[in-house]
Length: 187
Image (cartoon, rainbow, N blue to C red; front, side, top):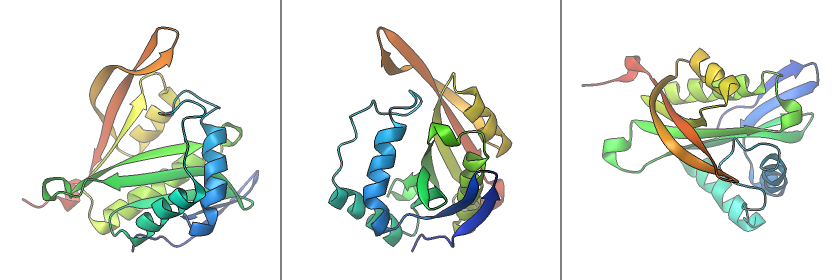
């Protein structure tokens, strides 16, 4: 099962807990996603596009908890969900060595190192289970996130031109980044 032990950190804003999402978190995760998608255009959805029932969210969490190669973490400050990170894979042998993650944090909780701690938790987990390549897509103008990913050894692999439509005739490029754990490669 793809679960991590809870990690606790003392921040200036309170206690941060990073842990595997639990079924009991489903309703709060839905509320979190609805809030965070309205705070930035760096995410894949526009406000109102996330229409998942509590039961569907529980099933998603349950599938992650049962998986050996996928995870879904929550970041909680003083018990409140303020961030998530999900890691997904493709279930074919030619792709079993890699996966992609997405991360989101409420805007009021940016600049406290929470993203760094979530990604650090992910990197330790993927290295532990033997994932060789971890990928992500990031908006080309999200320089803070790009710099954070670089600190973990992610490098740019490509650019998807006009990949995301923001509205009013505005398109954004996406950068594909990856971290390859060469110590895990078997030839």
